[in-house]
Length: 143
Image 1 (tube, rainbow, N blue to C red):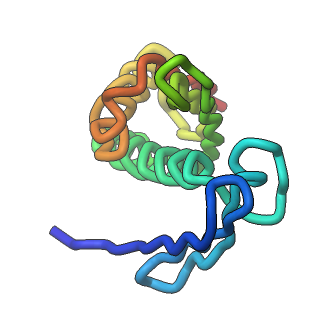
Image 2: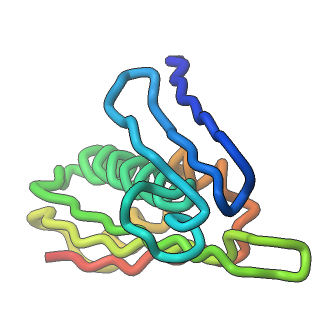
């Protein structure tokens, strides 16, 4: 299989420091900070935002493969991810991920679609990597 890389640089303390994340492909090069992660500052990204993007992309690709294999190739898949970072007694924890997907796949009935969604949720590599998240949900709509 293919190996992918990314890196992060952090300078300074937790609250006053600043960092930068980038991917080996060069597709992403973004700042991040305490403020972007915990205070809603939009001048950069967060690790949770990147996890959400990775999960939405992986799920969509895996579902596309399953739909094609079932004889109903998707015309369109749009998946949004919401990643919740909770404050616990043990520190911050990703306690919930919610994927919302809207799919256009002609000739597919909703029952078969929901089964394929379930398989995609369980089978995509990012879902497998995120097994420790206590609550992962997928809301799926077939158009």
